[in-house]
Length: 80
Image 1 (spheres, rainbow, N blue to C red):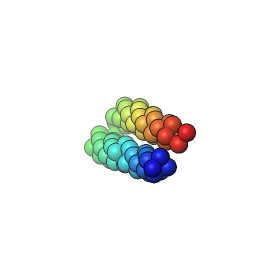
Image 2: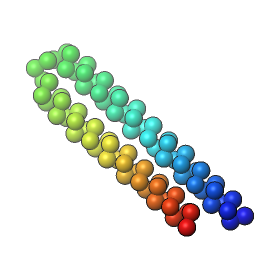
Image 3: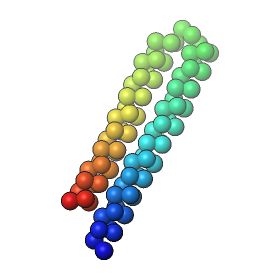
Image 4: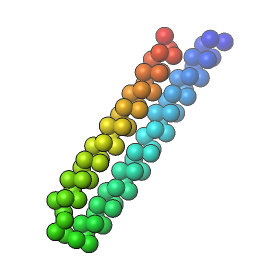
C-alpha cells in the first residue's frame, strides 16, 4: 500500500508541474502579443514597451521556475 501511495504522489506531482507550466506560458504569450500591438500602434514607445515586456517576462519565468522546483522537491520528499 505504501508503494501505491508513493507512486500516486509522484504522478500527481508530475501532473502539477505540467499544469503549472501552462499558466505562465499563456500569460507570457499574451504579454508579448500586447507589446507587439502597442509598438505597432506607437513606434516611438518601443524602448519603454520593450523594457517593461522583458521585465514582466523575467518575472513570469521566475515564478514558473519557483513553482516547478517546489513541485520537484515534493516529488523527491515523497519518494524517500
